[in-house]
Image (cartoon, rainbow, N blue to C red; front, side):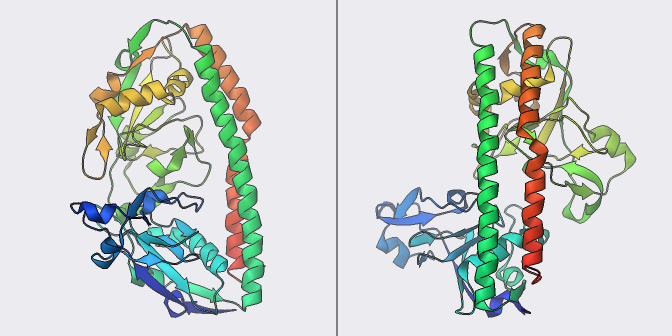
Length: 380
């Protein structure tokens, strides 16, 4: 195994977007994809279709089945393999391996390289990495048979991880179903603002140069499905005064205030912290009056379709994102069942969380990262 710049063993292809003003371009049968059409797991499903004229008269290109895709703008680091010929937009780079490189080995290498790519992000509004950033990645060029053996091992690890995620997703759905069942019917209602003891408070903004060491900071990619990931948080250098102002504690609820419409308002309940932690500017922190409402109940309500419908109705839309403000959050109206019923719900959710072994999700992710690291050092 020898290390070579990735650009020496692959070819790159850029994409583009046909003019939206030309309806003829959007009446064809050629699948055209953006980063939103690629899942974190690498599944690809087109929502838009373009014509041959759109391909001929724009910078988009149709890539063949089996091309490796890498998001180099917006959700940088997503990787997939095209299941059939498709056209791509400018956020995606197509990567075609030479005959010396196995396609799935390349895919796994790019996934393992995501942290390095994220360290190279640049851009004020839309962040991304350049072709030079990708092409300069040090690629472990092993004999083809070894590449295929490594890819097969990592494929199996991915399959185990996917099954584990399905189990956890079912348990997450169970919590939501229990909430809906327990609190169906008529209840007294209240505005969230009347139940808040502190906040909502917008989080901390620091320039990228301040990241890398210091205090852990909760970012929007640090939680999903209402739960904070077990993986290590990024760190930011800040003063003790700022730590005091933006610190999190158990029972706090964070709500995303700026995002795409599909993710706007996603929230998480802070359950425990290993050390003092702050939160980023694109979310708000709120603390509720536990004499009136339990944070576990408010968190459960924020996962419901009802709460999301209210949030989306208050959203202010811009070109690439939407936002809500503190007043919007305080004006949310939620049912207010007795505290005894809320406590019963919190107890049930606690038992479900124990069963789901959420910490093992982090252990599994760590295992996959370890396998990736060993694979691309020639240790597998």
